[in-house]
Image (cartoon, rainbow, N blue to C red; front, side, top):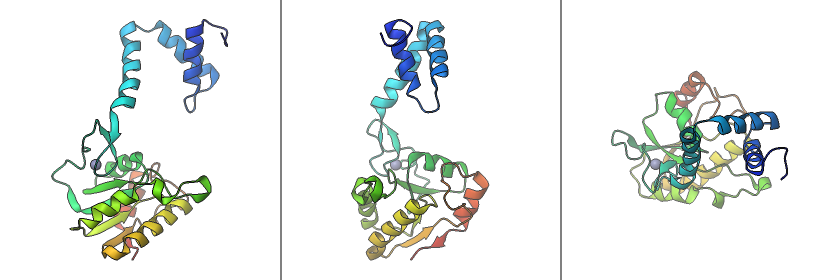
Amino acid sequence: MSGPYTESLNRLIEQFGKLPGIGPKTAERLAFYILKARPAEAIMLADAIRDVKSRIKRCKICCNLSEEDQVCQICSDQRRDRTAICVVEQPKDVVNLEKTGVCNWVYHVLGGHIAPLEGIEPDDLTIELLVDRIRIGNLKEVIMATNPDIAGDGTALYISSVLKPYGVKITRLARGLPAGSTIEYASGKILTDAIIGRRQLQ
Ligand SMILES: [Zn+2]
């Protein structure tokens, strides 16, 4: 027993304490909340955690989050403009761009950005799958919506050089986005301006 309570309660406190932004006091409070909760309620939380780990996969087309081995909601939406692909770093960016209500394109989720110092090389991202999609053709535009910071800019430039042989128009979100900020936390208004004012990269 490593804590002041019983073994299983200590274990729950320890697990809550690993979550981001949860200190020891909050971890304890959450654990006691679960202890007092109706069994069905506690089981629902446990099931939700288990389901998210076992059922959420990557979309076969765009690498966004998807249930089971399916194609994600956006890729399966027939009203989407498939001649434009918006490239983002992570699934949360898709959510925030979609909130603007001005995007009708499809996406490609890279799974991060190129950062050699952190050991993240181009091969660690889904760039090859993106190239495969572009090779199929029928594309008018690739919108680079990686974060407006050094790593995001570098990633956008790298990808645009990889895509150059395919002759597709490549744009980058406009600089209304503060340098060093993230797509994830940009406000809807700023993001909308950046989408509308996107400029050609090559
Ligand atoms: Zn998809």
